[in-house]
Length: 202
Image 1 (cartoon, rainbow, N blue to C red):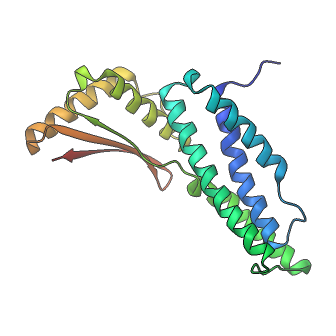
Image 2 (cartoon, one colour):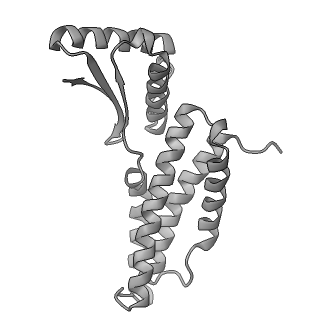
């Protein structure tokens, strides 16, 4: 059996972070007896592996890995604080069948909402002369392609050549219309849709 690819491992990290949040909420709410240390250990292992192998990742993969590790670090800090509250007896625990029903419903909502909660921050790049900034345009293309894939959108019509021409023309048009030198392009997922914005830099 072939070892997982880098993208498959990144997908695994993302799934595990979502599941970790769900199971920690269950644990702190009294629906689990023990914290989900196995999932946490698996995330730590993959994060350590790719931190050491950062040079093997493509620019879009490095961007995605960086955002995943930031999300994980944020959740770890939240979990640490809730552990401290739990030890100090500040967390209210629910018991009984009614409590388990509450936790089950909460978990169901968490699964539906975690994607948005763990969504990566926006990717930004500034262009002044796209024809001379091929690497920036390529990073922007990969970030937009990944955003559309994560949003479940079709990408068959998104080509490198077409995207480069779009950025070249958009930059030139805005420079002419607004009298600016630089244009900031922002890629983000908003309400489940991939967005590419062009902002004038004054």
